[in-house]
Image (cartoon, rainbow, N blue to C red):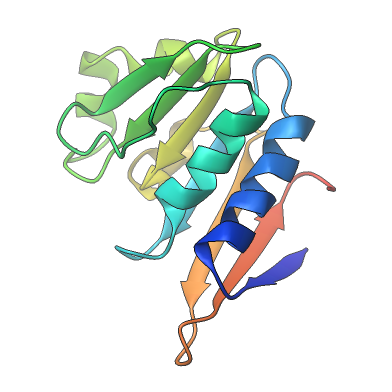
Amino acid sequence: MQIRSTSAEQTTEVGIKLGNACKSGTVVSLRGSLGAGKTVLAKGIAQALGISEAIVSPTFTLIQEYQGRLPLYHMDLYRLSGTDEFEMIGGEEMLYGKGVTLIEWSEKIEEMLPESTIFVDISIMPNQERVITIEGIEL
């Protein structure tokens, strides 16, 4: 499924729809270039999970945990070198946890992702519009 977004508000709305569809154990791969809107989409997912805390990209902390109707584990693997480092920080446990796991830059651990992973790709068009492609779930 492809969705076009012309604003941060529209991207947040896509995140809300996705968050409403998430259940315990959902893993969401967020892929896109820097500034594509991955964290904006994550804010919408968090909103749907009833999380009122400010959602920020965990680029330096690697993993940020939030409590809502389900726990939310927001990971940013931009600074990781690969699967060995991911295992060292205990990331694999969160792939099979009871919450919702969002992973920015999941390409670095692609072979570790569960088969049921939802893939979200955000592309920036020349006119700055975003094309959000979602695979693995119907909204």
